[in-house]
Length: 106
Image (cartoon, rainbow, N blue to C red; front, side, top):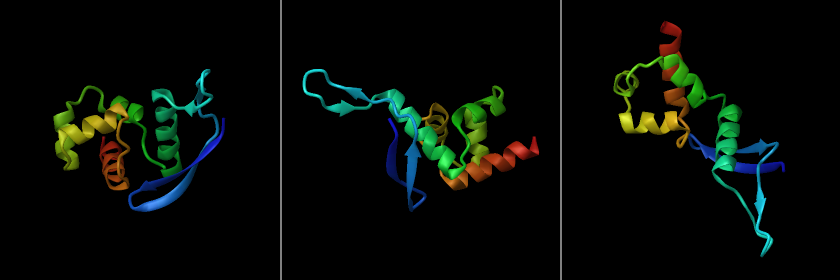
């Protein structure tokens, strides 16, 4: 089902439309709910809306580079980068720009 969300990213509130959100309905009570797949779809829609790299493209570009090496180049912690790469955290525009600069250099 289509669903619009208000999202705060980098201090800016914007509306993000998800065209096909997987939603489930409890057969007992009729309550609608989302699962991890819906979270992934929402996160990807936010990335697309803000023009951010997705984790798969970053991992592909890394080509086996250790997370510690890349996080050091970006000036962020390995833990933060790991969350970005797993998709559980959406990178800031600042981190995204730094990643793009590194990608262009190689």
